[in-house]
Amino acid sequence: MERLIDYLMEIGFSKNESKAYLSLLKQSPLTGYEISKQSGVPRSMIYQAINKLVAHGAINELRSDPLTYTPVPPKEFIGRLRHQKEETFNYLQENLEQIQHPPEVHVIRHIEERSAVIERMKELIFKAKHEVWLSIWDSELHEIEPYAKKATESNVELYSLLFNCQPTNHFGRAFYHHPSTANIEEQRMNQRLTIVICDDKEVLIAGFSKDTVPSAVHTQDPMLVLLAKEYIRHDIMMKVMSEHTSEEKRNQIWRNDSDLFYIVTNELLNKKDTEGES
Image (cartoon, rainbow, N blue to C red; front, side, top):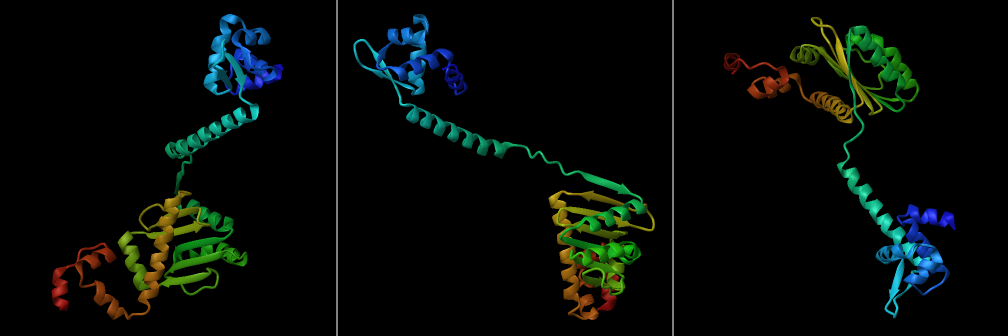
């Protein structure tokens, strides 16, 4: 009996309410006086307990003279209570999650010095299980190539955009920026922008330059991973599309358009040069 009282108290009953409800389960209908006598709850406190039980929907009040009370069957009462609790918990879970501040913080790690940047690039390629995306230049290629080879031998899908490089079999599905287009990109950014993406989960974005200390950022932030991957995708597609037109035709498209010229080279178009060409 004491254990039943303890469990009833866990679902919100007071000790006196628990005793009164159990007394009615044993015998009913009973008057308030009889419930007090059967349960041991003092008469001065029994009607407070009875009123709470009626409010809980645990007992019914019979309009007799004097008033008597009967218990709601446990299966009905507990079933209703369980349903109410489940609705409450479901509502709280759904709505609290909507206002919860995302607990996960995606750290952006800054890396300095060429050797440290190269080592982190190697680590990302080495740990990949499914897929690697690369955008890399000839000056760093030889240090990365053994790891790219191991990745392809381990059936890791490799998609590579290589700058100033000769065709190689170690970089999976590779696309090539020839020196003419590679030089434009390096001049525009004043560095060799290099990217390594591991399994769509991590990205390293590095800058190698003759004039400054090489540096990089490494993060698992999903938006930065997506942004870097889309950058490589679009660069590859532009490269593929450009191969279907002549260099003369490509130059006609952007060299005489001030906006496109700025977009491609990051320099303002000299109008005198344009007039001279026309």
